[in-house]
Length: 598
Image 1 (cartoon, rainbow, N blue to C red):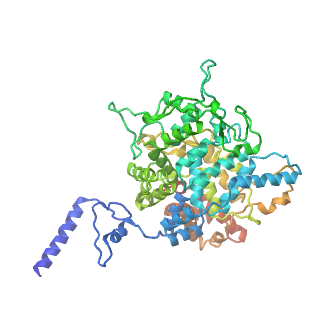
Image 2 (spheres, helix red, strand yellow):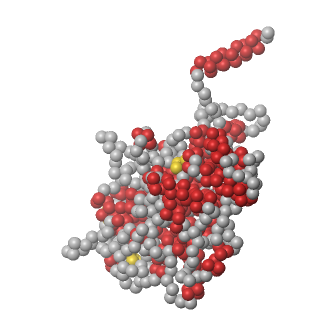
Image 3 (cartoon, helix red, strand yellow):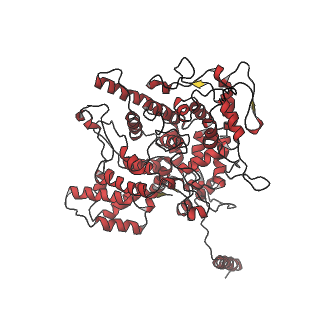
């Protein structure tokens, strides 16, 4: 044996022996464990191109990976959407979605429904109905392909909350115009969202700063503090100072450092004085003029705005403007919060939780917050860049994240419901849809803009009692998971899938003939799935449902349990195969592997 060959052989055996006595496995690839790894290529490709083999950058996802990505980037999707992502690649799909224009204004659709009611009743003074808002939301989301815009807007609506449980809960114009803010700015700048929300009549009524007066010490009148508090606590900076990675700072005594105190709230409350309805000619009117009052930005009456210096955060002062300029004061205050070091990590951690995982690592938060702070062009708050950073982060895409028990989230009940309808192409004869989502709310206590308070349906730092709390982890969606919503989900699935009633269609005005909207009754398209519902193809059906609904995460045991259960039902007729298909969907969407999205 040649000496060099002997040396090489001994080296290989030494390496094998060393690896064996270490008794551990290291998986290299899919962006994991590649620190200090160098890749040499046999071609003239650059080292950057070589390392892509391990980082997965530039590679197109397989169908399961595409489905997993869409579960993060959309509210719901179909088999054809999975194929599109697998064909285009994730980054190109994101870019295409960001460039896709908004289909239509939700407010315009509400106005269209209102005009329909007026015409149907022959009464130009006929009032509106909150059902117009529900129908507008549903029509947009099941007929438009801007999946990413829809996902981000829904997440923002759960961050900067208004609710039907309010004194304007029956005002469709208010909710449609407010939600349009998030649809319009889903890929815009977060500072613009803060400004439009501040001047929106729905928020002013919800957080009680409509007609907020300046101080009058003689009459013991002081500005309402509600919006000032929630703007800081919930919409921008949170309760405690954060590092850029989202971890909380502590002082020399090891105590958390509050971002603001009661004096700060009082100072900010002075900022939001002097605002009233945009279509009123005087200050102090409590009620809207009509339906459209909610779609006109608030106007400032400077004589009712608090004059003088306002001491805000981090030593910033709003000057004593002469003459008083309430609009300038508001701009200063919003800039003060938007530019606060907490704003990036606070908002980004929340968005990661809504899209990818309830427990993002500090490194993950830091990478995304860094993009919020500067998108690479010197722009702060660019949500398009932030969303892209969240979805393209190695942790979001990594295979081993899917087997990490601290990764992922419980799917929100409403998102599950919407996914069902998108997965199986809910359709009507006319292409127009009606759905006020009554039974969704009844069964799982969730649909757009129905949270019980400004704190959303669940809080980002909610910790269920038990192992999650003991390990200092978070599981926000479990805050609305109880005996009512668990059984409600199962009962809802039976209604929507097994009984074939996926939507709740009602008239737009009292006395509207049923025949006028019989072509707007929704149904699920299960034709592709029914072809696989016989015993010979049943494993293929369950595999298909596993891919579409659960990203291929159903265990072989769960799949076999479902197959065995379905085989107990007859397969003789077309109706039998339809029932089998519906039961298979019902069982998949009831499974733990489906309910936890990783």
